[in-house]
Length: 407
Image (cartoon, rainbow, N blue to C red; front, side):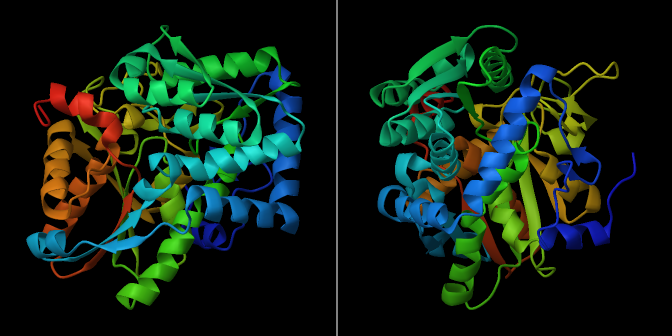
């Protein structure tokens, strides 16, 4: 495999990647059954036409402002700044409607689906936030929504299951495979294959076959675009580092992409280190994985020496996935971004510190980014840090109680 280099990073920053084949260097592309080719091609044509249409962009922008609540705030974190010896700023996606960044992509894709004539939407979810966002967006637009969710996640994210049902979605527990996000994606893809003409698959992360990694990035880049302008206005300059948690990678790519061309801004993704660095103990794909194909795209995977994808572990349902988006694989391979892991214990400790010092309850997913930021601050005193606060932690109260954190 020929790895990309600095010229490829410049091409990414200039908006020239993915290429016509959906590739970020060697990563990305389409690895799909023949039955999905027409649906994927129709999706790409519809998405490109919509995003290039000023009237669609105006309608989407109006909905993001009046219904989602954009722009989301940039909050200075004075007590974390004092504790860490850094200048800490938070991009508050937890304050978006439905409580996480997922609504940006869900609304955009649902609007594209309706424009293309779809009436039936299928989606997958892990932590439940994409399911909630998809259900809410479909309710807003009058679309029927079916959400596939691993049975393990249905149990550990019960509040979000109730929210999806209140919004009118049909939630289908998936008991096969690992019964988490990977299995939910498998089932959503099977559903789509069975009715590729009448169904629109609203994929929640920057993974899957082209055009999904590109489309999700385009819809989530509003995070970094807003944050970049807010940092210049409020902090007086760009951050020294932008940090986000990474599972599939949609919130992180949304934050990172608008900063790719800013060489002074380090990009740091924090994956789920789980309980250890052995196979099956974590979900840190870029820290420990190797290249392979999963869910229609070439990226890094957690797999054994025989190429079998291994079940992952994380206290966080939203990071519990054995792959990662191909644009993150590209950033990792070029060295433009660095990816580290935070363990379950480290994330839970950081979550408690953020609660006590800032009065913010972050999602467990986001808490991984906070731990990574705390560690980075200790190694880079006095620097300016931007953290993507990807979601709020109300959904995790039951998990926290079981972990002895909120009992």
